[in-house]
Image 1 (cartoon, rainbow, N blue to C red):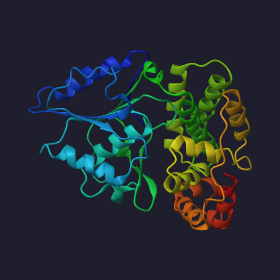
Image 2 (image 1 turned 90 degrees about the vertical axis):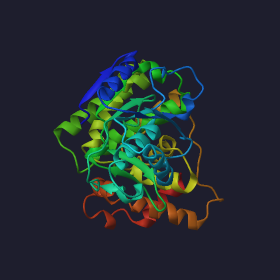
Image 3 (image 1 turned 45 degrees about the horizontal axis):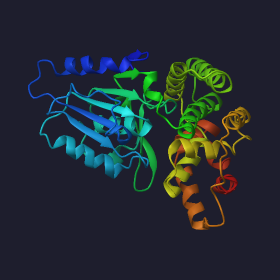
Image 4 (image 1 turned 180 degrees about the horizontal axis):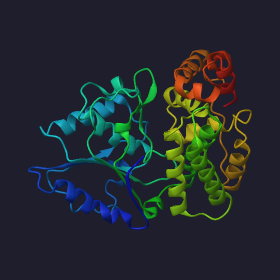
Length: 346
């Protein structure tokens, strides 16, 4: 779990004190700021308190973060010849995952693809702070930094990937376009569904996922409340961090890798076709209808059999999530043919 958080409108004002405290007494101290490129040249974030020593990275987030991109940023941070006292991630799931990955890789040798998997990180990471500017990814609470490598989309899943501090400020959510806002919030809704119906959970996980699900339904089928949504996102992130994703996320990874779809969008495309596994899909469709969101069919006659095969292979590489969904005998239940059948519905 994340040990410390600030919650409330204007909470971002606490970031300056947090960083000044980390720098205090340390000669040539600097911080690495990973900020979604959306905020570049926009007068939304006050960074006037940063010094010339600090490294500000406006991260490219139009695509899912790639291992090669993260490795370049780690090299950039290392070029100062000393370690930063903190790494800060400000933005959506991609920006926060990049920050988490940099924090881990600065103290662990080798390329980031070496750490895609479970509990492969040996050394403690750099102190890190997460500031979500969109709600639903759960990246601010989870122990994973999801990266797309040469052959797989898989997170650096480690206790060292967990933020030490987060700042939840609803004022930062007001600039998000409607479609992206909903797609990302539904990522949390799917996290909850996968946690609840998986094999890897306990009473705490179930309680968090159930409450988060109820809050999201109240928010999107009732009255919008951005601060409440940040809390629901956090609870969903905690649930999935102590459980695992299930069927939907592996399917979405195939869509992201092969077709370049953003994570939240790919999640919605996949979840929309999984009613046979998740009863929550019915409510999900009600939410889409209320917000006048129509999910297009992605798979068309232009998609080749070879592409479908690669998407299916990318899905089936996610053994932990699929074992969570179906149990240890999942390979005899969720076949490649079944994966391709589901993909064709999308």
